[in-house]
Every structure is written in C-alpha cells, then in structure tokens.
Image 1 (tube, rainbow, N blue to C red):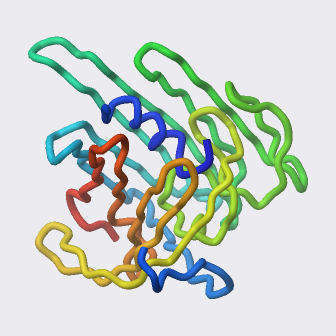
Image 2: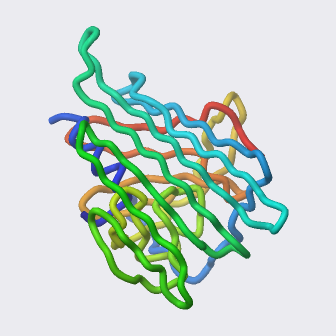
Length: 228
C-alpha cells in the first residue's frame, strides 16, 4: 500500500468493481497554511456523484501556541434501509512550533478495527499501531492532507494504522475550481503509488479538493464552504 492514504485505499473496497508536462515536486516549497483557532473544514464525499459521507477537520489553538487538529470521517453505502458498508475514522493531532508532537487514530472499517498512536521523542516519532510499531524519523506529516507540505515529502504517517506510507508526488499545474460559488486559483498535485490521488491547494495553501478513481468509480471531496 503506497499512496495516499489508508483512507483512499479503504474506499477501493467500497467503490466496486498527467499530463505530459507534469513535474515532480522538488525544491520550490511553498509556505504552509496556518489554521486559526476555531477553523473548521467540511467536505461532502461523493461516490459516482452520489452522497457517500463526510470528512471534517476542526482546529483549536491553546494559550501555549499548540495546535490541535481533530479529524472525523463517516462514510457508508446503503441498499434500501440496510447499511452494507460503513467506515469511520477519528484522529487527533497535536502540533507545536509547526512540528508534529503526537497523533492518535481509531478506525472502524466495516467491523474491522485499526488503531495507532505516536509521540515525538527527541529526533524520532515513536509509533504503536495495527500496521506498524517502532520509530520513524522526524519531521513526519500525518495522512490528514490539510498540511500542504505533505506534497514535498516522500513518506507520510498513516492515521489509520501507523504505517509509514511511501509516496511519489507530481505537480500537474494550475487549475481554477469553484468552491461555494467562488472561483479559486489552485495548484493540482497527484500522489502516486498503488492508487493515484489528486489534491488541490489554493494560493493560501488551503486544501480545497480531493479526487481519485477506484475500480472504475470516482470518489470526490467537495468543500462545502471556504474557510479562513
């Protein structure tokens, strides 16, 4: 399993079943978006254009400058009144001075439970998870996608299982997308491995869209409103 996220690969189970000018992301690192206290990101998740669930993030800043990030994902497929697939993920990140201090995650994938927890200890992140236990070098970015700096890395930490995921990233160019009726200029990236996942960030480095195809079906993240 080597690209974007545990979550995207999990969705392959549900889904059934670059362009020539693309450039590999390299040295031109942009500034990361800095969340304000109380900021919330809400995506509606669509499967083949139909409602599939939601993906939300909440940001809180403490008096000591620490940033807490809560991620809440709920996805389901129903036939009539019967739920045939359900996926939930809850994760909590703590950042200090733009560095990840700790992260925890609990996932239920159609009855299968996955957990992970990690904390910074010197120059390493100590990880205990369903998919991996051990130490990984810092800095490391979790697979929650809000931090644009992930596209300048070749690995990220799964908030589902604790695995360190290998990724290759391409910059596909500039796109204009519509968010809540507003046109945004964005940069389009593709995270590549077993599955290709496209991500869009605007000129403030805000995460504004996600898209991938799994087994012939399209999964799309639609931002419900633009955040600061």
